[in-house]
Image (tube, rainbow, N blue to C red; front, side, top):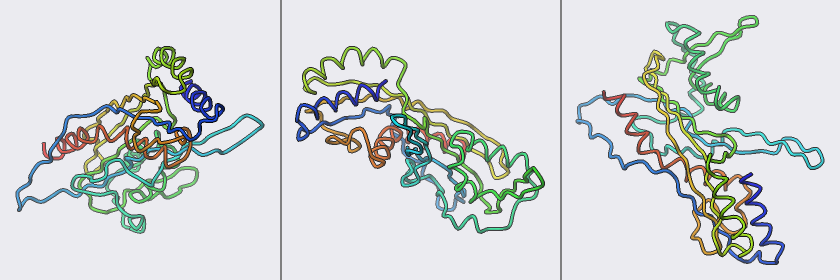
Length: 270
């Protein structure tokens, strides 16, 4: 419903011959309190942490039948919202070349670790999990082994939803703002509210789940001709383009990064 209103709003400008007018959208994300990382003593042995995920999604048109369109969402690996992960990194694809595995961790435990991520991001997360887990077919079943990279912790970050979702109270704002925006050609603002959320799961080196955190990334969008735009949505590109979705998601989910870093340190240095 939200996308329908926005399309009508933008298309009304186009149909009236105003494509030269700058239609801008500004996004107001939920912001966490600022956080300053701990200062560790020089002789302190820093933990080795593997980070997994922290990506948004991109949408692709996968089928078209007349006016019917089918879109598929997959992870967008061009950017990660945790740009400077504490005491670790996301690792290169070369990690998948390590053949040494941890045989002391039960296969079921490794499988549960894998699907704590894949249950949310589906098969588009297989490439990243392959860097840390080796899967061996065994008849109709599979054995799961953790690659022996000697990490101290594993931190999984999941940003959802894969497709945009409206907040529960968004209909009220649509009803109030859309008619005025439409008939004033964007001079009066159009207001929308979206739902977004993040989950961070922290495991120790033996894949014991230490803690799970959930974050609310609810946001507000305001569109108007005079609105100074967020970098994610400028001119008449407000409705399309992979770069727009990537930049838009970064703007939405980055608001909770300070809280995420604080929570990670609270577990690592408890």
